[in-house]
Amino acid sequence: MNQCLVFDEGQLKEVDDAVCLAEELVSNYFKMSSAQWLRSRYDVRTAKDLADHEQVAGPFAQVVGYEARKKNVSLGSSSFNFYKICLQDPAILSALEEKQRLLLFPFLLYVVVHELVHIVRFAKFQQIYEASSTHGAAMEEERLVHDLTWKILNRVRLDGVATVLDYYREWRAKPGFDKLV
Image (cartoon, rainbow, N blue to C red; front, top):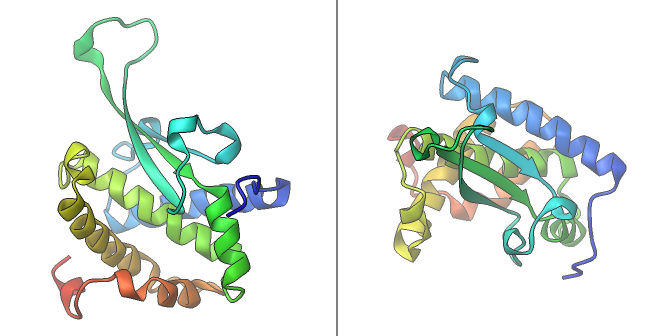
């Protein structure tokens, strides 16, 4: 994989558009009001803005958790969880090159919805961030989040979404599992 691959200006616009739509879809799915929405608790960054430890080979994105607190507040009791969705431009662009049926916008939409679902689950204590790193728990959580992502995107009428859903079909749990989620 060519580590020099980064999104260009036009692709960054598609990232921004995908993030906006993903936020709306995830918020609607989880029936979160604007007051409940977690915008102040996460950020989305691309390769050019990632620290070394936020860059990984393989995945298309990862959620990195941090402890944060408001400016000018030194008390530990004011700290909160802050998550960074780290998009991995080289992996995404390589996948698009390899699987030419995939389109950038719907692929980004899937990736961002998927990562936002993780964050909502962390925020609602449906999954503990630290526990998500053990292999068994991580694989089960990934399948669950892929199922939720499928449920959110399955009814979206947008060119290329069906192709992306098909691309991820092996990550979904057993048939009928979506009725439990």
